[in-house]
Image (cartoon, rainbow, N blue to C red; front, side, top):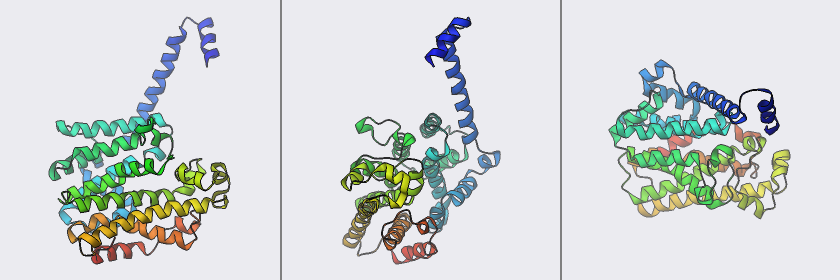
Length: 342
């Protein structure tokens, strides 16, 4: 590039710095256009934001759509607004062509949440529905901002900025747990607030553990996909303990040496968090999740079912059967609600 700039300076009247600035401006304009195209919804979406969110969740998050039926009728649209917001943020990494565009989309949502205080949400169906839900349910803006910020950078403490947009890798279990607390667990805090149940320490503490378990099971389920893209989602702390070679995982998948041992450790961590949540309800609530908060804790059901299926294939996260939907899931969610089980 430096040689190109020297060539341009020599043979044209355009100074090198001006030439470089023009290229940067052009690239930025293209990025802005891409963000606008990806973020701007159809007019139908803005005319009925809740219907847009409902359709969005039905298409993008099968498990959440199943769980939505157990929320009170008057709060179901609010659940869809919150979940659509969460899924939109979570899918940015896979839906953009480069980190710069992803960061711009993250900034859009940061500005959108900030605009709620002024009563001027952007003309985006998810933002409009989220704004209306936040006002009606008086949801803590802090939780919304925390989720956005976590998607932008999962490890400020070690100076890794915008890390999630560049990689799904975590160096330590503590780093991953902190990220899960700021995303999955914080989303559950929002749902508790939606149901007017956020004052309970027991519920919040249990939600924290369920959120971590949910994050780990999601990462394990996505392990084959991310490995094919050159990312290893199991924390380096765990893979190093077992002598797992990242290059072998990227090349051989489930046949890589010791990868099943690392998966076992990671899955055990998720299961431990589920057990902790169950123990809390056993101790404080007589062994069952209280009815008012059961919709929130249905989030534990898909995680628990996945871990059971993973164990049956001897912790081979690359087994093709794990990429298929389980026919048991709708029934397990139904049973989880009526039995009050986590």
